Image (cartoon, rainbow, N blue to C red):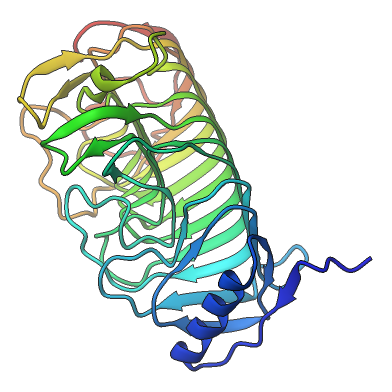
Length: 359
């Protein structure tokens, strides 16, 4: 039976005409399926998906995606921004335009952004989002992220995603009510009930990070030729604005089955509990509970990035900074490359330990 809410667009190499066709369909009804043909199609701006929409590319079997979208937006608008619940993005490739959104613009210039960073007033939660069989390629410098999951978002599944280039492959970050990062008024929103699986990131600054989240599981990831593999971060102490009375932020986080080959001067993995507030510059420690990083292989490559590193910190596969409550189990450092330099953990060894106290 044909889905009456499914529409296949006819797209061309005319960015303005493509944008008009997309916008007209999105305005025609409150949800449905937008099917895109095979090919590479430019847009004038990005696509904003409200509740109940599915954005689907052409079927491609077990091969690479055959539908690609790019945008000529110069204001940092994502190629696709999800601002409604029950949204699916599948079988699409993205070629984001060059972007330099700056230190606090992690939700801008992306291929996909789910949610918002800063809100003018209290927000409704966005939930029930699926991103699967998606590819992203960034051909500009490592200045903007590829996929951002930000703010009041929950119940999200991201699977079978391949990313080449960019700053961070998948950036998962808190959001809050406020005019700027230095003037947060609260409440704050912390992504949760998020699953990331079968992620592949290469030639990027970083594979992924999780900043001030809870109830997150990341499994089966391959991060190759990255400067940093992944980080667990406290989020500048924004949990002080969390409206839920129960302790949630920093709880029940799992990272397993990661393989990281890294070429940066600092570390492959960093877990930090301390954070400095942008509001009053105070330093506080986020208490992690029930957080496990297990069965990961870290492969140090020769340093090929331009970063100078920190002369006070030797190059180390794993850095733990004031993160009591985090368990590292089965972390293997594969240094068979015969590289010089110090590491925190012996090359070729497996470890099982509980990290506590300052790193």
